Length: 118
Image 1 (tube, rainbow, N blue to C red):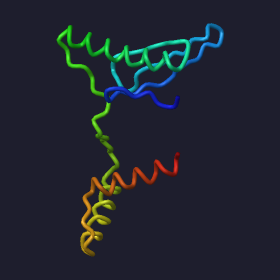
Image 2: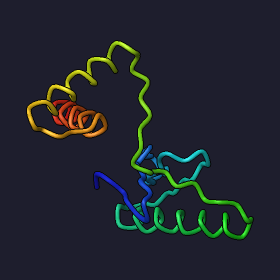
Image 3: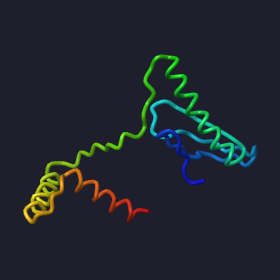
């Protein structure tokens, strides 16, 4: 089991206790701590989902907005020099008829880097 996903949330296995046979996990990218544990992968997925449902119910009952971990946004402060280079590249592409925004260029660059890192 590589990834745990449910209702926009992601979880990971944080520890396997070989003495007790329990796997422990945590929901990623939340300010709140949401954990789960089980003795086998099938139950771990079930507990992961139950933990998220419990978290959402708790937030609703308490009248607070549940954290949404993945909005699809990344704020990157790259400095003026790098920003200027990106602007030049995008402008050059536009001048030869290839319409691309700075955001699209950055997303493409991130995808390339992620593929090399994988």
